[in-house]
Amino acid sequence: MASPLLARALETTTPAVSFPKGFYWGAATAAYQIEGAWNEDGKGESIWDRFAHTPGKIKDGTNGDVACDHYHRWREDIALMRRLNLNSYRFSIAWPRIQADGKGKPNPKGLDFYSRLVDALLKARIRPLPTLYHWDLPQKLEDAGGWTNRDLAGWFADYAEIMARALGDRVQYWSLLNEPAAFLSLGYLDGTHAPGRQSILDFLRGTHVANLAQGSGYRALKAVCPQARVGSVFSMSPCEPATDSKDDRVASEHAHAITNLWFLEPALRGRYPNAFLFSPAAFMQIHRDDMDRVRAPLDFIGINLYYRTVVSAPPLGERLSNARYMLLPARMTRGQKGSKTDIGWEVWPRSLYDMVMRITRDYQRPVLEITENGCAYNDGPGADGKINDARRVDYHQQNLAELARAMRDGADVRGYHAWTLMDNFEWAEGLSQRFGLVYVDFATQKRTVKASGEWYANVASRNAVPSL
Ligand code: FCB
Image (cartoon, rainbow, N blue to C red; front, side):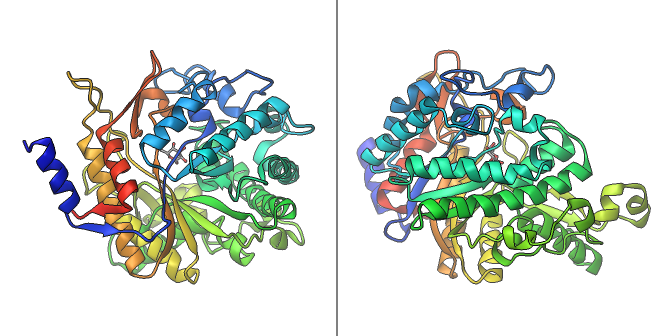
């Protein structure tokens, strides 16, 4: 093993890929996954509180009541961000902390929490990048129909306006929704996430209401803060045909439309892409003027990327027996060729290049931010107390090399956010999947920077990634 001096010398002489000046090196989190304090200071119940409190819904039986206790430890967590040399922090605002029932007057204690957080971030020279909705819908709004109720778009716009008034003097960059395709497919179609519905109809209607909310939220923010840069965050995954056959290629384009474009094309072009065999407009309850209301000329597109999707055309027999295939004739599976992370997702760094390039080509080189990219590896402290998560270093290094390649090939990418700052509550997986750059001992709440965190701190300070 090299001496520390030699190691440092090697580190500074290894060839590196530089990123443009001012590139944002960030980490991302979400309120329910880290804050805890689920019923403190006037916070209302969210669909995730309800879901995680329901026995059998979370694999390891845990919930987000405490999570990383960030609501009480945020100062310590900002100190960690400084240690990692971050210049951007993507977090989410818990809607039920601001409006316990999702409507009406804001809760001053909720506003104060985020206001203090933003002040402290700015003082630490870290850009605050809040997301307005990262899945914790006020339960009262779910009781009123949730994403299938068109009124939700207006309530979301009211909430966006409240936040713009509260933080708009200091926050310049905003994200509207986090991964609408994910929260609607998992929450309303598969039922594996809150609120646990299983209905194609609810899913389709929900997607339209989410598009309406996205457009309305955009306008509400801009009305208060015309200078703000407002984007939205999409879960994306390149959809590759399983074989070169025409059927598989056609199927993969259907899959691409529903996976990657269903909330982007309405915002940027005021129309739905051709995902389905016949138009689902009748089920979606699209009203006159709706396609104007869903428009939102996003100032940036947030891409969350974890894996690629392999697509094949289902055989005729299956098409006729499976209602989903009648609408969307595409069998989608996660790629299987590469190594797997501990959550079972394939490592395939090229997918970041492919996705960024496809969006760059098809939408005339929009401004992009990688708002999430990361991996679950459950390495814990060794005998010396250090967490040597070498696989996570490899993961980020390879993904960043692909991102740099996309930027060389013309993509306009302004930032990269590792998912996630610290190990946290991973939705239906509970506390069992660790994605963090920082290790959290959930019994004591002790945080320890992992080897990947040290590596990322170095990358951020040099604004460069060591060559592979
Ligand atoms: C994304 C979510 C994020 C996190 C990662 C692993 O889909 O946006 O909250 O759970 O997956």
